[in-house]
Image 1 (tube, helix red, strand yellow):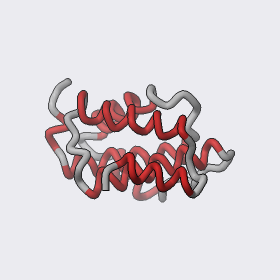
Image 2 (cartoon, one colour; image 1 turned 180 degrees about the vertical axis):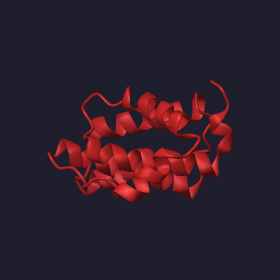
Image 3 (cartoon, helix red, strand yellow; image 1 turned 60 degrees about the vertical axis):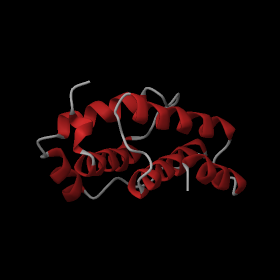
Length: 125
């Protein structure tokens, strides 16, 4: 299912709104045009849906607990972690509000798994 359809379903359940749909479509476009991400994979679709749900949760004044410390430490020790942070920082520029640190740990984990599945994303930009 394409991202727009997923986002409309989330909107129908009042989990996100039109402004978050717009943000998510900008993020999807950035991943495609700048990072050369194949957004048609189930992994990326689910990662973007999880990001949309996280943004909706944040807008409602809530935040998830941080990722397990041991898991996050393993991600931070990866050779590609600086590139993961580059993607993360780039995507954060498209979100016009503060994303709590606890939520960011989950986003970073998603970008890390993306790089493992699509290593060409590491190519210099």
